[in-house]
Length: 404
Ligand code: PLP
Image (cartoon, rainbow, N blue to C red; front, side, top):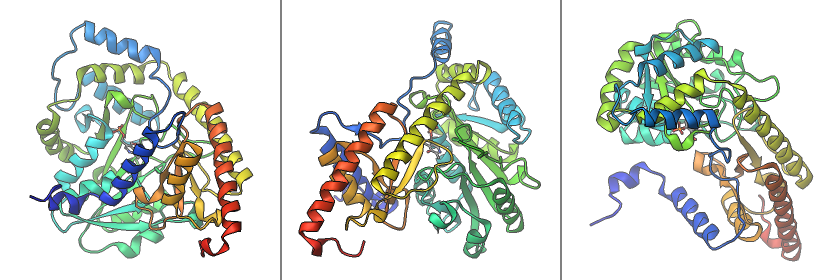
């Protein structure tokens, strides 16, 4: 018997999974590791949201709900989308899912036939690829680089469009790069989608977490886009609710209704308690979102200052809570994967190589801003020491440095 099944092995990138497992194993044997790996906020869910969940449980929210989600939550999501300049969805055009993550698989299973092509930004959040591969669809990767600060442009996408192109994924702000696609570029991408009859999955889960003057243009409210866009978002990031496992997709009724059948087959409904908590998140005070955004902004600046001090270049972090830093700019003779392992073993700082997110180079690492400011500052110092040690080692063995 071959395990895992060759069918699964074909679909998931086991090489990079092994790398994460290896890093987690190294971390297991170490004390005081500063974890800048996972995209899971260290911050707790705001108190009024937790309280709403507790009250909902006490009041009997212990049952299945409508497969699309409870009505007041869907109304609140529709209102929230409108408030931020998105499309005007009715409540039956919103489907609450157990995390945005499940939404990706539901969309893929309902739209992709074998051989259909899904265009994805690379690097970009990798479960989109896994979802397409599960459907025997073809993943068409658009490599992005520092030239555009890792944002997708219409010009980059167009040459990759073929008669089999069906879905275009836009992740804005992007994970792992923290880049925000400028509104004008989003408009051009939307025009391209109309011209080539593509469905756009617009992942706007980090849209509330943007810095400086950057802002996110919702795709579905652009001309001709409502009928061809599925907006995917959730509560994990803006409200620090990763563990509640709740997100949503929004789109035209024709698309959402069949998807609700798949959601039902997967999960019947999203946990009732999480839905009541998410309702409180949307209708309650919003200062918590701004407080968290400001915290991330301070952490972002600390990471950038630390990288500047080390002499490591990085993409401008414009949104989400990641900094995408260029290991190759250090000229250490190490790829990003090897650098992450050394940094963990010697510096007790964990971060992930960009290859996990489909980066075609082994040059970048993703650093999550999901630790308190003082821990981030310590992490940057530790990183500086590891880089200095590698430089001393390389000076002793100049042949080892290579071209990188
Ligand atoms: N979209 C992006 C770009 C993400 O980075 C993530 C999680 O990291 C998700 C969606 C899924 O989030 P959740 O399933 O917690 O809603």
